[in-house]
Image (cartoon, rainbow over all chains, first blue to last red; front, top):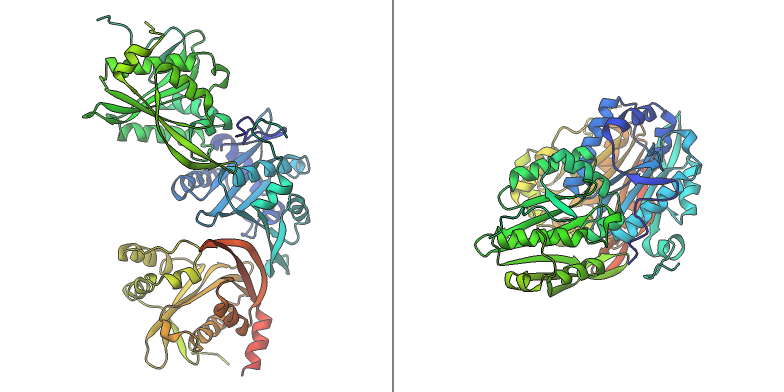
Length: 199
Length: 191
Length: 190
């Protein structure tokens, strides 16, 4: 049983709780960057005020507590605990061991620094080693080539292509579903450390 | 009968604090996944300090009579290092569950937890007048099992393969100590 | 030319009913575990009438701009045989998911489901002006997959081993139909 390897800490970043007072302002700024929102999800790109973000945080924690099918983390750099993004596992169907995954690094300057890769590594370990999920799905718009490469490098496979599901800037785009099975992650993704802590 | 200060040891003392003080300490301890995997079967969730405080206040309101909850403070530096609680109290039978956790990892393996448990048992048997105390511990928490055995707890049974972590199944072990076993069996009586 | 009988097909029509009518039928169909397992991923669960009523009033017939829920009535004798609807309409993208369920088994395999789907698709493309419609179906439901293919849906992929049922793992298929594909098909069958 490997207890020493933290579920929440990596070299450059950690998965951390929401700090409503400090985080709301920063996240509100991210929502004013339409590119960030459009790369991330299909939902209508819409800016939020800090107060609206704070309300969203409250309903996230409420949903985590009541529905028990959502796990939400902030991504913060170490050691200064600066907020750089979020990561979540959601839409978990416990009886089948299936769930969905989404993460975002809010400021473009903070991308391609290794934060995303390390956060994904922690998130996958939490999903497969701690929640014991069987498979994960990530939704990626076809125009987000960086995200496609990012997930494929981690072992995800394109499983579904919802043709022309998105309409942005006057043209149509496909929405892709990428999937990763626990056995695939165990074989190539994770560092396997045995009970004595040897790799 | 010595009127000893039941809440004072030589290394630690037991303190009941306001919710926001408790919430602040817990919000840090939650982020130590090694601690959380030793303490709880639920997947660790990183609650915000505000949510923790709200829940603590809510719990206080709902179960005041049947739960005794205290924080563990070091005497030397006056630091919060963990918690201690009695719960699932059966007053008519004189039995309760005890739980203990040291959130500050640097205080593990140095006798702080053992002393806190001794204070708890003294309170249980000399003030609450319980007949026995029960606890649950995970099979992979060897340090805790040894510590409880030293104080006099005995394994009473296990739920085999109750939980799944890191691809393996683990037993939940139940341990118990009877009042007469504690009096005869404890090597260290503080106060 | 305006289609005024928008929600009327050859065998069925789609209606919006009062909560008590919906609850009565959903409660009956809820007890059919084969139906539940063909259609839903969540564990087949018997719900109380109170729970179903709350669900119907708050969700199915509630104030949701992205949800359109209908009951299916046979034209012949006006009997209610199932339910169908559009859920999760993303207006900016012109996309939605669709679901259909024929609760009355005697109506299986006779074209009622196909007809209801055609009516719903016509509503989606001609009144809601959607661009495409999606659905999910489990690999162990071949009758439904065939029926959707006949209606013009194309398989767009599968989430592998999505479900565990009866000790085995099963894929969940995604199917989609684009507006122009539906139009071409509708013209053909005129």
